[in-house]
Length: 275
Image (cartoon, rainbow, N blue to C red; front, side):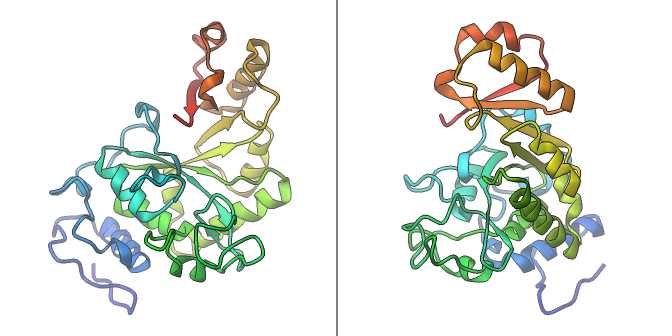
């Protein structure tokens, strides 16, 4: 299969026996994501990129790289370089923050506070293309949601926990609709099976599912009434079991041995943040 259009370029050394569909997805990802045409593409070296076409379950990984992980001592960048450094360090599960750009596209950023990118603040929200052109801290590569899909195509052994920040139904619907439409436009909707949606309430799942079905959900408790009480946690555990939500996320300082009777044999995995 040959792909020839102005957005794609041949990749030297591409395995000739690779299935055509994966090859097409990879070339598309590279065309969308020129920053990944680097010697460090398969950060582990060799043919590591192609060795894990069927990834392990995300629940098998004990650690997730928050906001793509650290880079040069910086946290919270959600940047390409942070991803690459974390991948090279062995991470395969990544958490990232999502925000809406001025043009309605989704980008990877916690919020629009000043200081991360020159000229960007709550009064000056860029379009997705403008966002991508402004380095984070003057040196790191910003990522859009489309870039995230490109990473999923390029690295078949990774998962992303996506944290959209918004909690009201209208904003959640707008954000997830934008992501689905962009993925459909580029023929990359199948990559959603490696996205884990982070919820702020159990009911938020209904809002997301009204837009698109996701296989994986986590419930984060830091905006709920839970503050370490076993009886409150039990209610959330039961709600997760009813809804098929696979895990609960809580502050690390709230996790105590007193909670073990609630969690034991529940089938609900617990994630602690941020360690």
